[in-house]
Image 1: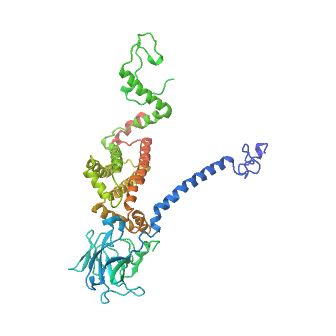
Image 2: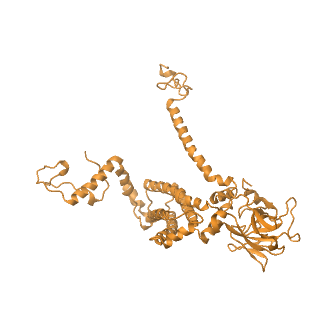
Image 3: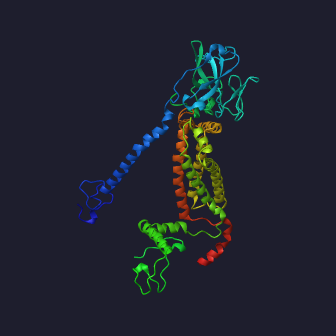
Length: 222
Length: 275
């Protein structure tokens, strides 16, 4: 214990050296500081204990696959040809009634029209999604002009689903297909770039060409 | 002990005893003849007693007096009521919203039916839903008028910049209320507007796709999308709005309001007074 004020050093490592009343020998942190720190740490831990699980709960769907693969029957192979599109309704989400349904246009793969991408297997049927690649409005196929057109902002696609005009940033999405027991089945969605190369499904408005594609990451689950 | 006078209108305040009148406050028995207190006297005294009891225990009266009876600059006019008008629009939204929540079901297969049940079957349902639906538009118009008043009167300048910033955050939150509320009736317009709005969010670089997945609860519009919008619409965003309105009002009371810009000429008089 210091007995005269001259011995106090305000920069001392020890509370005793700083002349704090009631200091213990070898004590470096005042009890007040320790209590403050403990209270703050306890409050922080208590807050994190509910905030982090809550946040994870709310953000979870970003990191998990919310749409497991479901193969949906759209009819016998005889229903479809390799020249024109046949509209079919599939269920994107069976739990939400009409809101989960969407139209797709189905056509048999045609070696004369459809491009074969190196390193990517051929889908036996071309199933084009009607979700516009601009902001997701439903496009419609006009047989007379052989174009897909969007009612919202005037997006126009050719019969392959490639962009011909308007704001869309990439071709129309497609779905995986397979033939089981003479019937056509439609599976997961995939997106395409302007060369019709296959990518993991993206949201409308996400570019898949040039430098733009790098600012739109794919989902962690795909 | 004499209590501080609560900030009551004059009519409710207890008047001091007239000479010769029996002063009941000092235990009665004065010089004058004992008169029976009238019903009005008793009522006034009862109210004053309750207010005094509360005031003694909360110390609220200096705060309330400062908040409600604060001085306003010369030239204060009707444009200065736009903020209060916005506040009342918000209160109307909050009250009608709470009651709509008693009948609304945030489920994709029930939402449309419950909303049309509110309109067609519930007593006054069409009126309350209409107030909420049109009130949202009124509130946004009022916000912009309030913002315009603040801008054109220069009321955003030092030391009120922080209040402008809070106001802008409030504007964004209110627009978010409009966005999330739009889905809830779950008709064709609601659904497609929300699809487009979520995809607009997805168009943001880097975080956009994640934001869209957060709003939609996954990669496609799903069974819990409405529940999420509902939760944002009636819990998270209103909570933030209430907190920020509190901060906004605190700063208004703390900093006071500005005089309209055309009153600059009076500065001379003020200077002369100070000298």
